[in-house]
Length: 209
Image: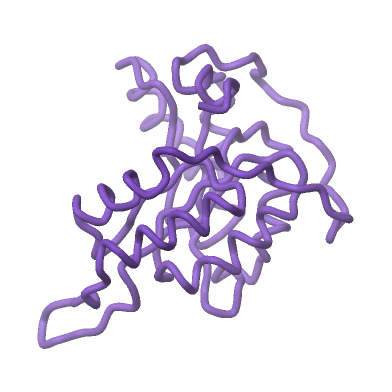
């Protein structure tokens, strides 16, 4: 049940906090309800920055049938500093998800695509050989949408990450633009712990570095 899930997240997050982490990354969540529980567990004792990433299908929804804009509003109201997507989709298929996130006011976006769609070969899961150059092109397009944090998920290698870093090192991410709200915002919860994060990572985000 939710209490048991909260306890599991709390135990893991508290162990990390005690060891001096700078921020939390919650990634590859298929259901918004689960990632919100993880955020609640962290926020019960910590004000460190949180990067929360859901995974989306080609249809543009989570496996719990939630749109990116809906997820972003809920996470934003939970005091999550960076909201994004990772896994499942390759670079090109992830761009429409990022476009929808970019339409949500006042959020920072992250993106970590797979190398592409995997296939099974015998007992192995094999990813397509997406080139580092392909990821470099994606990185520039993502930065133009306002993405602040870029990375790679399944099937990516250090070469893909290096190519993305080189592609955007001289760029500043575009500001995410305002748009008419696509959904009503959920009621803002009363936070258990709310303070301005103090880590160097958060300070760099504030300075738009």
